[in-house]
Length: 92
Image (cartoon, rainbow, N blue to C red; front, side, top):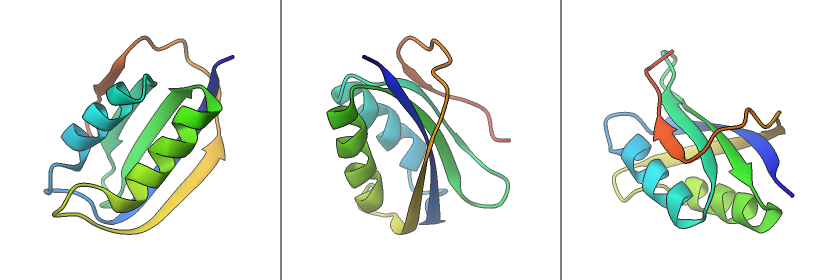
């Protein structure tokens, strides 16, 4: 059964390839959803998939790509928006 979670990643996460890295990580875990930069400097993602994949995604986001410095990852339950595949969205 697909579950959905909203992620807010804070720290030095923009300008370091975090969105591209997130897309690759999510696809590798078989997750659907999206990722985008926020104007406040954070990165936001919606991930949809199996519980184990969501947990692995959260752990990966806590580390991020080599140039990132993640301060916090906030996970909250979300609604499955029916997304197929994982992609980047424009900054909001």
